[in-house]
Image (cartoon, rainbow, N blue to C red; front, side, top):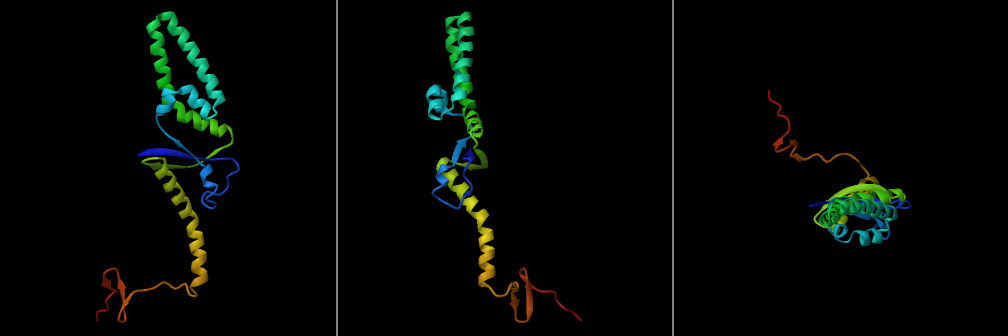
Length: 168
């Protein structure tokens, strides 16, 4: 299972109320990003992470220049190491970029894939709203709020046995 951090845009106010707005939630994987490892610059451009891109280019340039001073083989190793490190930190940097834009974390959910994580999160959000509506519906439909007490004949049932025995 993978863990996803659920983020909502600044103007988003209701998690389960409007299904047309729920598609605006961002489910950011918490883990290694293979696409960010393989296509670092393109991945940052797609996710509009401009400051992260500038930082990545600066760090990659410094590391490449230092490695080039050592040997030509070290340059390839340094590029590989920078890409591996970025693959591990890419999703955290994406969350940081979204938070800078005003997005907020609204939950954390586990799922085999993103679709399952979305279903679990929206189901949980709907259930959090449900107790209020169930309570209102129960008050409006049932005139009495007395609990139902199971009985066998005139004896109260407690668990799997009859109520307290009265011995004389």
